[in-house]
Length: 557
Image 1 (cartoon, rainbow, N blue to C red):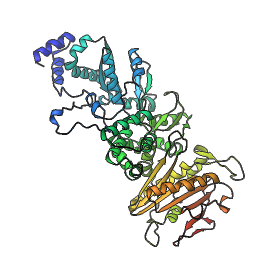
Image 2: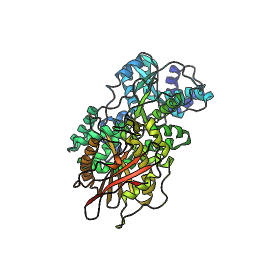
Image 3: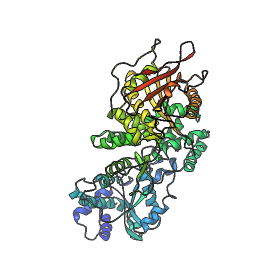
Image 4: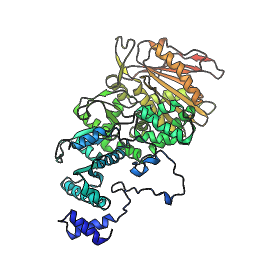
């Protein structure tokens, strides 16, 4: 825009503007006029591209208005209706959700919807402001003014016609969220009360619609089980769904190939995205240690809800919510029931955070068999010595199940649940075996519309694939069920060894253990221990080199 024309237009709108402000406004208005004022993303122009306009899955990035026709995503317009109503009623709304869950994409879509109603909106990021309390509002005012100037050049006519000019649309509230919940005694306070608005995640039907659109574009068929597994594993998290979509775009639509890729590569791929790299770094910091201790003893390895009532622990939980690790049930500010945000986040933390924070493991090399392959039984026996005894002991009070039989002569005793043992075994094996060239991964098994969910551990080194499925003080019926289904999964992995690892506190079970059938090929080990985890006995049911099974007597370890 011509400078003199700009001055004339600007003075009409802001008659009290100083010459310095007018000069600054003109300079800003000519900086990347096609660029979004906050996100810094320019509108794509097809004339500069020789590539066909092919739709894709967008990962780790806000979906801009001009990109919507070129990406697979759930249009948030329908779910925005309640949000729009609250804003139009003059409410101050705090929109929140986990990292990379689509907050910015939804905010931009809401801006479009508001402007269709005659509102003038700006998109403003708190991340650019000073973290100094005394300077906060000063830098806030400057930031709003700067964004108004940036938008002025294209929207001056719309501004004159706007029915409402009193809605600054603010986003990127992560830092403010942390301050509100981790520093309740802070001198910075809101100028008015606010309403919280949860970022609604895509449901199964919407995720299915995305992949149906993708299949139509690519003229291919994707196994329905893949889509179900993606939805359950991500809990509808927009960024993770898109990441999985990109993976499916690169492999075939076969379920077996998806499972193998998920086991071998997906965890590393997730950890390498900037959003989740920041999450990992944050959780490893000294400031997060208390929160990680709580997460380790109450939530990790389980997808069930947990009730937290202690005030100090609630503060830690809210930090974990702000990081996208936990989600809450019920009202945002008053909820006391929480759970892991998704199976993928659970696995990410157990693989890339916990082993570094709690690094106890054997320093000697992993034991090998005569054929130089990993000796699974000796590895398991050795790993037990590096379990955190405090964690096992607390399991009976913090993360427990009710034993089906007698424990110390008593019925309905509380004993540690599967996640306690699995977290410790996984932590030790990652720290120990990965340093010797093995890869150790965990995998959730989930079913739509079912509470049947369990997790197992896979160890790979060269052509050796070891599948470990853990149980905690199970019934005979549960053992039989696991003996049967573990074989199906072992076949899909081409596992060379399949193990059931049974931890129990039940009286006398070591004297007459319940083993798999002789022809199944499943090997089993029983670890019987007291509630203090100071005395452990081991019984095994394994196969010798001739293919014959045998059971050992009770062994103290």
